[in-house]
Image (cartoon, rainbow, N blue to C red; front, side, top):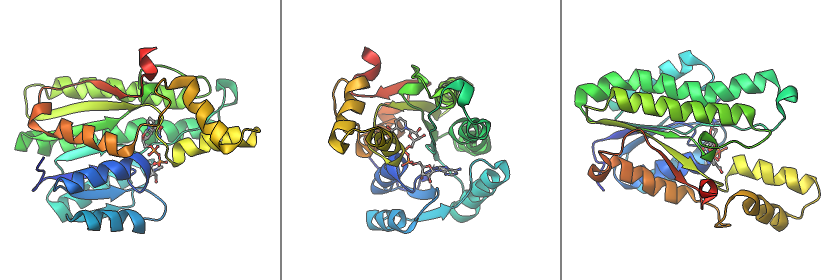
Length: 256
Ligand code: NAD
């Protein structure tokens, strides 16, 4: 896999799945633009060790003008973007009648609308070069529901829909758009849900085992590295006719 000369933007890549995908892309030779909150230094160090060129933009994806600034940065510093991985996402658990309105708005903005904005701003240059990859990190929750996750499930189903439309609009070009639908991956986002069980009385190992046992038949976490490898496949020539799919990597979750 050789992505030398390509530039990838991975949103929400300071931790978890985004960081794993950013690392895979960098190891394949792509220049990578990181984005996200928290301590950026460890992510930058990992990318530096992977060899390629990288940058960072601190856009808060709830704000359209900051997304526009991030896309201008990829243009000014890297000459544009060839691969967009829309990965940033947050979660909040509550039943619909108690769901905080501000959390609903944030989840829709970060998990769904930001992918529309990065895509609308990247597509013209991708089409002009006749090569591009838009990879949306949806979730099994883009395919099935779970209680207490109204905003997340709505956003991820929306992201799968957006993926299909972009795939159709680019079908006769060298640009592809697909969604990945992971099951449980052990990242800070999922650790919050394990911590909730620990607070309710489970011991830490029991909390992890129960979380997996309820939904994921393999009873093993999917890893960011595995999702990174699937991303590289979609960027390869073999992935060129994979268009508009919602590809689950979920230990059998949605096979049930
Ligand atoms: P994570 O919490 O480790 O990473 C989320 C990233 O998004 C971080 O870099 C964070 O800084 C960034 N982020 C949050 N709010 C932001 C904002 N307003 N602007 C910019 N960046 C922001 O979570 P993760 O588990 O790695 O999740 C990554 C993606 O994978 C999410 O879209 C999530 O829905 C999806 N996903 C995760 C799992 C899982 O089991 N962990 C399963 C399926 C799908």
